[in-house]
Length: 244
Ligand SMILES: NC(=O)c1ccc[n+]([C@@H]2O[C@H](COP(=O)([O-])OP(=O)(O)OC[C@H]3O[C@@H](n4cnc5c(N)ncnc54)[C@H](OP(=O)(O)O)[C@@H]3O)[C@@H](O)[C@H]2O)c1
Image (cartoon, rainbow, N blue to C red; front, side, top):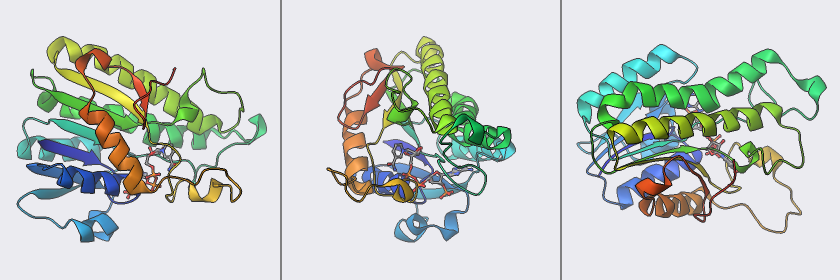
C-alpha cells in the first residue's frame, strides 16, 4: 500500500506512521514542518521505503511544492492521512467566552485545521482521482460536531473542525464522481495523551486518555474497514458515526 501521512512528526501522526509500517506499506511518505527535528524522523529515518517531505499548512506554497514532490514519488496514493491540528499555541488559545474571540487566532485555527487539509487534497488530486481503492482521512475532533455541542467554548477549534468536516464531506462527493472506489472521511481519535491535549487533561477523569499508539491502532482498524458507501462521513475511533 502506498501511504502518505501529513503531520507524522509527533503525537498521533508519529503513531500513525508506525502503524503504516506495521501494516506493510510498500512506500511511505511522511510530512512535518521540520522533519529532521522530529522524534518520528529518528524512529523512521529516510530509506528506500520511507520519504520525508517538508510542509507547513501556514505556508500554502509549501503545500503545492510538497504535493508535486509527493506525486513524483507516488503517482497513485492508496491511503492519505492528514493529522495536523492546533488547539493552543503562541497565536491561538481555546476561548472560554465570546469576549476572548480574536480574528487572527480564528484565522490561524482555520488555516491549520481546515484550509491546509483541503489545499493538500486539491494539490494531490491527480494521485487520488483515478479509479482505485483509496481512503482519505483527516483527523477532526468530536467537539467539531455542532449536533453534539452542549458545553460551548473553544470557538475557534470547534468551528475550524466543523469547517474541516464540511470541506471533507464536499470533496468526498466530488472525488466519488471520478474515483468510485474512494472513501474520504474525518475521524475523531478519542482523548489522546499528546502535546495538544496534555494542558487540558483532568487529573480526576474517570477514564485515562488513550496513548497515541492505541488511538492510531484503533483509527487504522477503522480505515481498513471503511467502504465507498461511507464516504463523506465523520467517525470515531470505535468506528461509530458521529453526527455533524
Ligand atoms: N490529542 C487529542 O486528545 C485529540 C482529540 C481530538 C482530536 N485530535 C486531533 O488529532 C490530531 C493530532 O493531534 P495530536 O494530539 O497528535 O497533537 P500534537 O501532538 O500537538 O500534534 C499536532 C500535529 O499537527 C501538526 N501541525 C501543527 N501545526 C502545523 C502546521 N502549521 N502545518 C502542518 N502541520 C502542523 C504538527 O506537526 P509538526 O510536528 O510539524 O509541528 C503535529 O503533527 C489533530 O488534528 C487534533 O486536532 C486530538
